[in-house]
Length: 58
Image 1 (cartoon, rainbow, N blue to C red):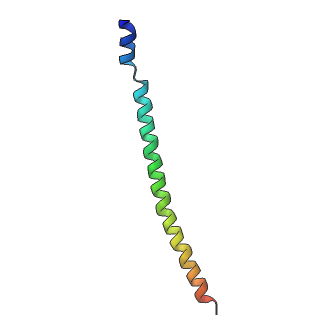
Image 2 (image 1 turned 90 degrees about the vertical axis):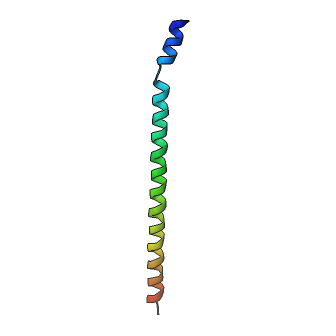
Image 3 (image 1 turned 120 degrees about the vertical axis):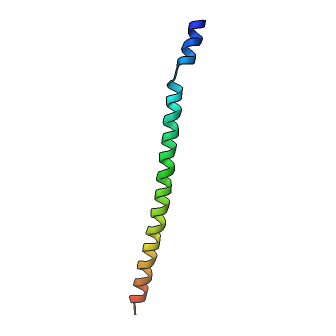
């Protein structure tokens, strides 16, 4: 019984899994923020191109 409790308290695999999960979630947040920023810039660029095409049509 003492050996089982000792092994349970010394087991750090769950801690590593939690660290990997936190790291993965941070990466996902950074990716979403980057996509949102780039998406807004691309939308602005397409709107500018659309406006220039409309102005060029007689």
